[in-house]
Image (cartoon, rainbow, N blue to C red; front, side, top):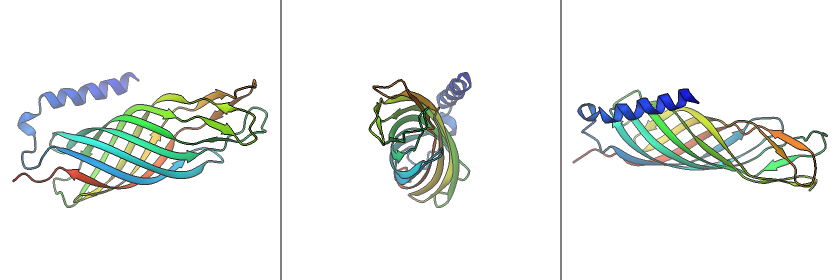
Length: 197
C-alpha cells in the first residue's frame, strides 16, 4: 500500500515541475470511452462485458494521468463451505486514479503501458439455490494495462487485481470465498487531445 502512495506522490511531483517539458503541439486533455470483454478469474466464472469512461490530462510529454470509471458485468460461480451452492455476482464498478506512458510521439501509432489504483465496488449477489443473499462490498485494488492508440481509436488489455472476498450468506452461518480479479479487453474512442491550431 505504501508503494502505491509513493508512486502517486511521484506522479504529482512530476506534474508540478513539468511546464518546460509539456507537449505544446497537442491539447493536453482528452476522454477515452471504451467497451469490452470482461473475464473474471476463478473456477466457474462466466465472462461478461464492460463499459469505461476515462478523462485524462497529459502532465508531461507522453505521460497522462486520469480517472477511470468502469462498470463490469460478470458472473462468478463459487462454492460455499458445504460445497452446495453456486453464487453469482452481477458486476462491479470501479474508480481508479490512472497513469499511462506512451512509447511514441506519433499520434497515428502510439503503444502505451500503464496502471492504476483505486476502489472496486462489488454488487450484491444471490445463491443459485436461493439459500441467501450476499451483501455488496468495496475493495481497494490495482490495475495494469498495455495497448495501442491509432489516431483516435484505442485498443488495450487490462488486468484488475482485486482482493478475494469472504462473505457470509444471509440467514445462514456459511461463508463463501470468491475471486474478484478480472481481465478486460477493450476497444474505444479518444475524444480530444487534438493538434492545436
